[in-house]
Image 1 (tube, rainbow over the protein chains, first blue to last red):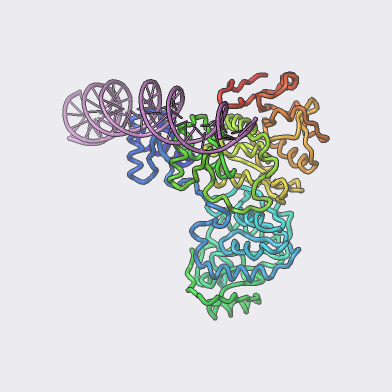
Image 2 (image 1 turned 60 degrees about the vertical axis):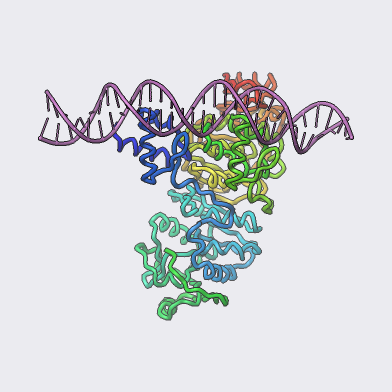
Length: 268
Length: 268
DNA sequence: TCAAAAACGATCAATAACGATCATATCGCA
DNA sequence: TGCGATATGATCGTTATTGATCGTTTTTGA
């Protein structure tokens, strides 16, 4: 067996499992302990894995997401003030008893705090949102079925016949990568598919975007402007964007920012 | 078992319960007290947990959790030793890559700790099981869609067309209210419906019941004995029950109780 | 309060993992 | 084919980890 081949196997094994022992790799590659140790040492200096006694472990250890409060470690803290203000306005649209769909995302996640005092029927595809509402509110929670994708903490189903089709809501709330004349834009094709499925199950579509999203562009169009009922953003929205929304007959809600106002930065 | 593996299991166990004893961890990892104490001391200086007399406790535990925070506050603590031992044996049937179904319940929940070091495809209808495995393991998690019932922390779908139908597994693991000559017995009609749906999606059916369940009777029959492939119980199983299982051609696995006990035996 | 039981810490032997070295095997190239 | 370079496997001394045993400390229960 060639070196490259072993390395491929080792990296594959170490990514699948928290730890791989030298013995397991010996059995897997049918080579000697000495060779495996040399390979591990080599991959260690290449930062492809971490060398530990007895074997090797992944460089990206399984995320220890502390508690319910902090799901997506990176994105969540960007523009947090704007997101909170926007989410607050979004929840103000909801009344007890309403059936709503909350699509997963860092902005929509901020809805969980004001939602804690409500009693709505919440359908979501976000594991952290469901978790938080389950533990900290009395809302009825419905979850979509499917595989839980760890990076986004989103539940995706490749099938068309999931329970999503049995839920119909007055409003759906969602964030987006960008919002322009062509419509709502998203980056990931997988997300596109899931979100389009959800959009079809709601009457009104409420989009939550901080003002930086009006200049952000992405490659994939999720839906045209006409489909959007309401846009909630912060007071950094450019006039041109406001005019664009007005012409498309979209309700615009501007969430006022508090005293400590920071410039919105694009959050990827 | 290697160091990292033990640490993973210890951290998994300590998150599930406010305090874990050294003895429990010895049983869970099949290593000596001295080793566990060293591990706990090590994780203590790493601030991964807090070392206390008798065992260890979680670092951020005094956290208030609502009703739904812990799976079943009452049921969870009874027969905990038996449940852990039984769950341990159940996980020993699983190999990396296996597709398994884990039905929600207090006994099956104990499978999460030994599962922490595995890499399987786990389909479950239990929110706590999904949550724990998501945070403490690298398993692929698939969740059934539907309403989250807070009392049982189970996700139920009244519809027949949910994503459950798209998942097929080698084995399904489930607990039960009782196990008698007439078959597997359950108390709640709603659970019956959901569990029957799941049973149809697996090849083998593995039932996890502590020995008290052989004398328990319930009103509703979930499935006949013939459908059961394997029963895992503790060594308190009465001879009559063992004979009943043998006549029904069911594999019986007895989980040893206590530190130094006879190894598990398989028959039938 | 005292005695029994459990938990603990320290120590030591056994074991497993490691690193270094050398002999052999394989590959590239002329 | 022959040669050099590199990769691999085996051996051995060293080091780290583990489990058992001891005596000590803490908790439990009468």
